Length: 336
Ligand code: ZN
Image 1 (tube, rainbow, N blue to C red):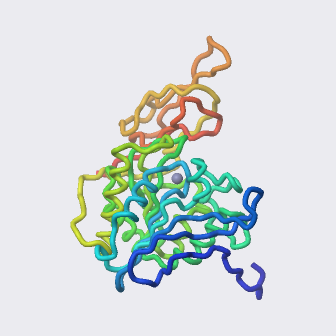
Image 2 (image 1 turned 135 degrees about the vertical axis):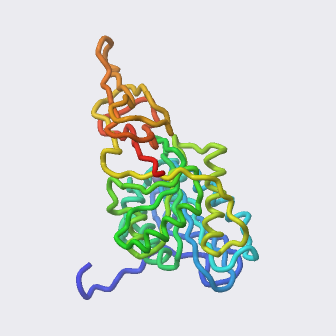
Image 3 (image 1 turned 90 degrees about the vertical axis):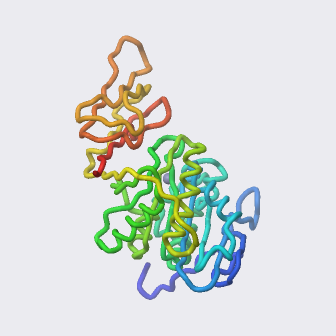
């Protein structure tokens, strides 16, 4: 942005009023004129529930369009939560990257942009960049607590965890950790990001918000267990924030940490994955994690991938076939 240039307005208009008491279901409408719809729009569903003064929670799913626990929990919450149940405000966007969610793809089919690498976005950018800018400049500033529900999508599978990051502001980090624990997934993870630039997480954290994300499963589907974890977790977070009345559900959680880049194993081969460890299983440094067979011919030994540290397997490549550069396995250590 050049000095003296006016900041452009975002083209998204909201059919809900964020300051009105009661429950409103509507859309964020983003003009998107295209071949099959002149003067058409992307219509992103949104619900706002407000009663009196209090904290605001911003709840999102579908940041990646092939992850389903967030949308399941949030379409359910929007349909079941009432204004009488709460004090403060709940903003629910079940499918943040709505074009990607409709297409069941990780990134937007319109501009091929990954929402979680598009922040802070651009008001005059592509469709995904415009949605990111709307979150950056309109929705995030309204929020006290931000929960973004992810899973592994079509190509990764995770043990179900809620996650917080190591932050420079330790008081802010402490508040994020409290909300992570309140979500009460079976695992609670201090998450090390490979590439945090452009993430929604980073945008919210740099704004000083209390931010928690999750990875609740994967493979491009939800299970009865992972959907239930998401639904319970969302309500637990609202209770913790003082927005929803009631007692939080509480189960013991396993605390995890990712101390270094040794946690990650990336594939250096194309081929067929033969897993040797399943999610949640403990390994020692040097243990075989997986073998990758070349599929071009028989009679060749498989490539072996071994654990670079002691830990438990928290994420794995989901499809049976793998490509050079894919994330094969992620380890984390249990914190006693
Ligand atoms: Zn995701």
